[in-house]
Length: 200
Image (tube, rainbow, N blue to C red):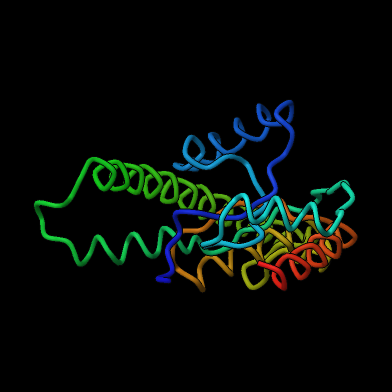
């Protein structure tokens, strides 16, 4: 069968947890939060039958387990990349309201990015001026000068954020903000995925 992204086999959290997750998705500008439920996708795309999955789960006598989500990650948004590619192949008449909204969102994001860059430049200039003044007065530099930037420990949240920002810049495309399971949960999910893959 031809691959597409219209169906997935996923683990969906209990309904009482949806409100917080959906608000976070809305705040993160996830345009699909009203189409896709919050979920951990095991197979995507998925071409099976829901009844077959239910039968396999029953046959395997799978025990319920808890999943702990403990890390924020940014990953490439493959569906958006696919949609973007398809839209470049479409005729001008095929451009719809979604693309207009994307253009408006891009313009807003660009304006915010420029404002942030401007403030960063102003902050760096002020820091350099302070460092220069301290040097002229014979005082020890405060850790910031015209030739250096502040360094953070490798395991700091700032370093993790900078690594994710670099990944985003290297990828250069739309991304998804995700919650990642802890190691124990990952192992349980992987085992479940492998068991299901054999039988589906």
